[in-house]
Image 1 (cartoon, rainbow over the protein chains, first blue to last red):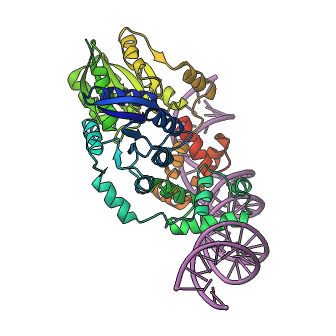
Image 2: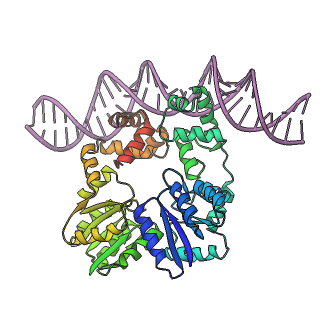
Image 3: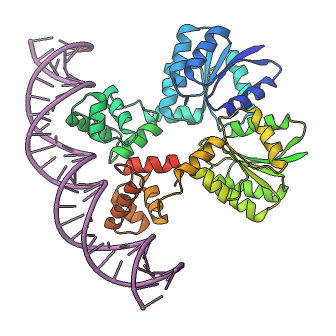
Length: 201
Length: 201
DNA sequence: CGGGCCGTCTGACAAATGTCATCCCGAAGG
DNA sequence: CCTTCGGGATGACATTTGTCAGACGGCCCG
């Protein structure tokens, strides 16, 4: 019996996936979670063979949760199942100790197969995604540039960001300027979008 | 037997939901689709009792598909199942002839129940969402303002938008300015975000 | 028929944004 | 020890953006 914990914030999707996995003779869903924090707690309690984590979750994202689980429950193998195959996500997931990375638009039947292969010791990554992640190179933004760009993502003005991060307006402008150059874009908004689509934030 | 067609672009979610519904004794998934166009075609072929549509789909979105289905296959009742409970989505879905609107973070077990109630002739809408849609009021943007704001959503500069829409730059600036005022925001980016979160684009 | 409203355009102006040069400090690395 | 790099700041500058007033035609509605 392969014991699995499932973390995914959309209840209907979570329930459907749990049902799907429950139908497999050799798989048992021993816990569910709607946030990264919950996932960490449930994994710690139930000590499953596998934790299947979504990335986009409130409170704590799946990648952070993956790192936490790898630290606190090393016997548990972490798989990432996400909507967006962003190169930066893949890279960070791997660094966080995940052993598999799959996107939600692969066929549903592959999920159980993937779980079995991971339990057998394989690591699995969508090959196209792996290529994209490698060719895209690492995140070019410095930590502070990330902060500023993230703060700019909701349409805040420079003054807002400066206030929120306790910086001078000029400094914020400078960081944004270098972020725009490093992302090869023409303005703040393009920079934000590109950084998000690459999983750099 | 309630015959259902399911449209959802993420294959894994679609498969899981189909399996979930297939387990119900009185429900049969007679067709699946990954885009709005496919959904319309499949519904026309299979004449199901119910079409369950996601909104965010490539090629043709679920709301447009709903309108199309209501036109071409009037015997089929359309239900919307979406990630985002945006007021504007709800409003447009209703105008397109949908009889139910549910969000993916309600529990999975409710889905089958909802389908049965819709087949029995009920219309169902998340009450909290209905309240939000009513209190939010209708879309304040004129068609052209929507065009311009949509074109601005990817970070394009004014020049780009003017070129793409065959407008003068001044005109684009004016539309954006009025859009910013109508959305009660401070700049283009906030206007785009607000319009998107309200489902006005 | 006269208002409105929408779409389109122009010109002018103020404010915000993006760029650049230059500076200081501390940490890391040869 | 010197260099490089990241974080932080300043001031000047050009460009872009947002606002406003005004103008014109088309269309619908009272």
